[in-house]
Length: 89
Image (cartoon, rainbow, N blue to C red; front, side):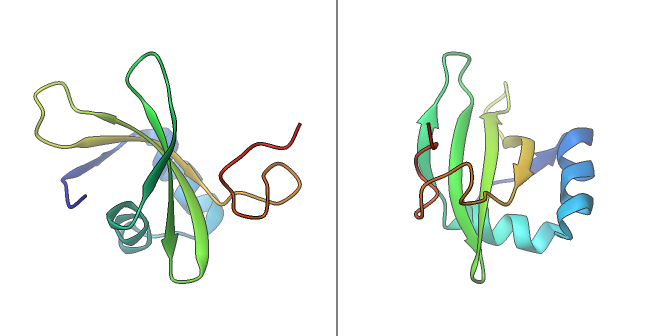
């Protein structure tokens, strides 16, 4: 999935909150799998930065030359299953 990543302000804030840098997010993005697709074209991805699971919400850039990073966070087992692919109900 190697692609130019363009970060929203919100994504940058979340990265700072979670102690993540661009390399962490790029590594997770490059190995990510889609776990949810939304009607507006956005997707929820699950990737890893080392052993850390990360959820990335992304959307293709309108000109097709990159990916817009809407948000990023580390999923927790209180809200997600142990594989971080399904929400707990």
